[in-house]
Image (tube, rainbow, N blue to C red; front, side, top):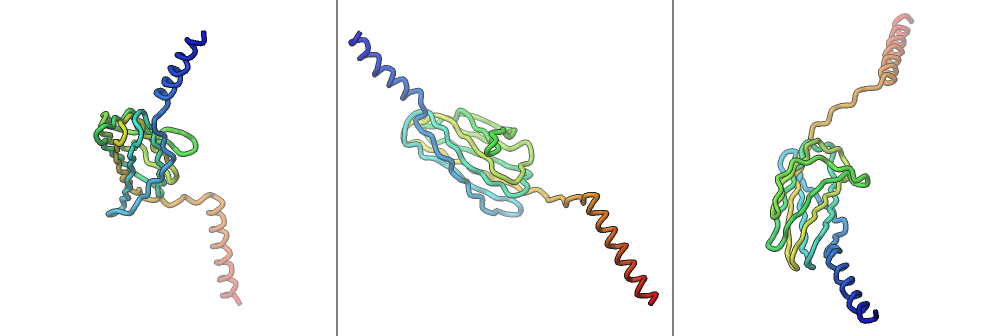
Length: 174
């Protein structure tokens, strides 16, 4: 029994290290900088120090409102992508993407306009030690539609016009 236990414990430890992700990144912000016209661009990347599976998390803060968001990722030698997703931060609600996906490159675009707020990009894959990948985000701002006044606002505006008209009439009659 003692002999089989000494063989079993190292095997369990080895299986646990192989099953666990070799790299788990903290939430890294993507800084968007103004481009031409209504576009903003940002970049993200990672140098994967350990071999094995990885999950990288990137935080994207979009300006109001984003009509179009494009994502491109390119893998260096030794990196294979397994999935890419965009989630509403804090709710884990996925944003629908139209994507062209391969193990070494991903091109994706949001199929719906993005509201102003925080989004989380999740990149999963596997890599050899020392491999890297890079990606870019390009957003195009949409047009702001003016808000429609509420009925109470219309009533207040009408009351102001009536009061102003009444004051003008009163001054003329004096």
